[in-house]
Amino acid sequence: MINIKIFVFNAFAVNSFVLSDESGECVIIDPGCHSAQEKQILEEYVSSNNLTPVALINTHFHVDHILGNHFVCTKYNLQPTGHEESRLFWETAHEFGSVFGLSIDEVRKPAIFVNDGEILRFGNSQLEVRYTPGHANGSICLVNHAQKFIVAGDVLFYGSIGRTDLPTGDFDLLMDSIERKLFTLPDDYTVYPGHGPKTSIGFEKVSNPFIR
Image 1 (cartoon, rainbow, N blue to C red):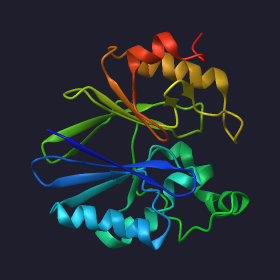
Image 2: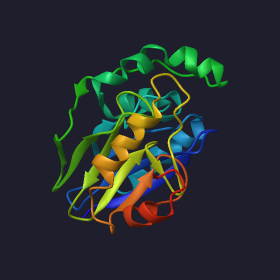
Image 3: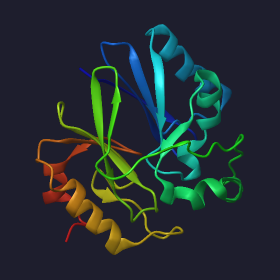
């Protein structure tokens, strides 16, 4: 069974995830840890629970979601996993960071690329990759069917959707991603977004004001 630990990191309140199971292996998703204190919090959680990080996964490469990539890669000898269509964002991360007043360590581009429908495994668990552009090229969601949850990045939020006014943002494409890749899942799937509280597919279908 997967244990889901959520940390809220950096000035943009990014939800960063550590998913672990009874094997002791874990994956770290969107490490937004920026300050020395935030990095220590993540490190102490992994250490105190005797976890072995085996993958670092980015749902997308907006700078607020990758601030801790260098730390995690260095500490646990990992390389980022992500979608190749995010290239623009890791290539311009320093520039984007300066616009938002964020300094960023060395930018680690992904060494492991994933595609829609691919299965990522750790311990006794697995996550299905769903390609969901619209907020940003290269955005992916991670679905676990056994426990009925989605790590959704900045695609779908409680009562909202990802913004589409940044480079490669496209409202119609985002809506298509939500409708075809997320809303085809059962209503009882829990959605863990990249910012803010969790929600569910069923709730967003009937309550989200952006849904047509």
